[in-house]
Image (cartoon, one colour):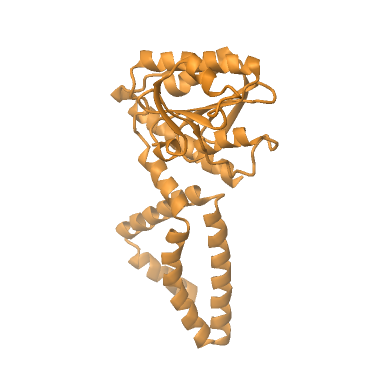
Length: 288
């Protein structure tokens, strides 16, 4: 009887406006779950919910007023503490949302293709010589913080310069060369963040490859990596490693990621859809 009365009350009070309001709130929580899934945020939230839920249940069953008062006090503090504790993760989410629909290619197509050719030539020679290399291409996300960790160059991209940078006997070979959004080598010997993903398809990756994946997890950059042990060429994008490339395949993939001109207005929705799909796939991999 009580259930029937509740259903009648719900039917009388639930207006179309209230339904839309509930659906919008549900969508907000649904999409927010994609961004925190697989991160430390979800682990802490799960633990906090279990702890507070258990404490609230005990307080209500045994009428423990002091414990109930403590829970009521902790909830606002938790709401303030979580954004402070997980500021890097929240910043990363906001950056990903801000990049949606933004044109990544601000250089003329012929200049981007020239840069791709220079990188491919350098990667092929480095592979033959088994000289390790990390070449990062900046797109929408600023890499200024990582440029500052290395030696500033501000030089034109050329195969000869890249070969010189990654020559094992130079001071600049141990680190990454970053090509900025203007198409110039901004720095060498830059320090990149290592990937924190524990579910990599190749678990025995070295530090260089983990750094290549890591920079694409925190930004939309592209990274070409050459293994010092095997000489194999790989490329990373959106936290994903594409291994064992030859010069031809490297050119094809770089052209698809960096060389294609997507500046026309009619491709805006396609770029936005692809970027949303990439974000969703990246977050799904982290939650796997």
